[in-house]
Length: 163
Image (cartoon, rainbow, N blue to C red; front, side, top):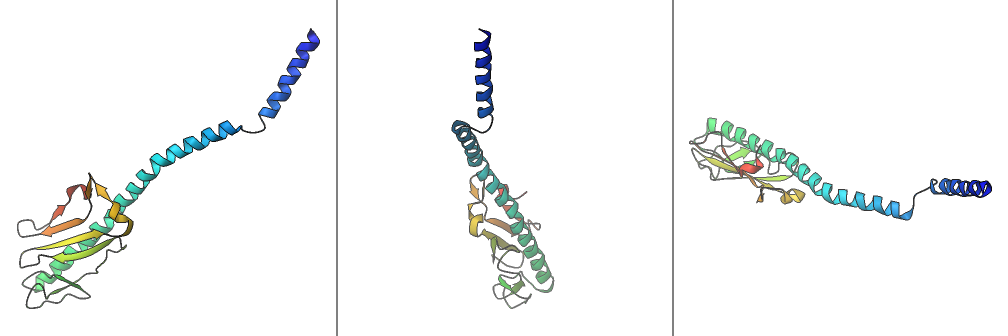
């Protein structure tokens, strides 16, 4: 009896040594499934946070546009409606040029001016590339800054895209 028990212990010892040298296919498949589930959940959240961070590119470009418009307006009767390499006051707002690039500093947004006049202007930052997939609360983040006499700091829309 003692010999059979010793033999059984030796068999278990050899088996446990073999089992501890690697992983079974089932264990590897479980790990792959868990990693896949985490990736499916985490990757879209990661992309959304990257897109939210890129909004600062548009916010900075719109702030620069507002400053350049104020510089032009200090020497001109109205705000400019055309983008250019230098501020140039002309006979009309449509013919006046504001020193402003057509793209944001990191090229994630196209910058346009509209509705320029003596007391108001609108600057729009339209997303480009992957940034077109950015949305906040189901609303696309084409960021607009509308400055007027009633709102000299600018009305920022859509509100969910601004901090």
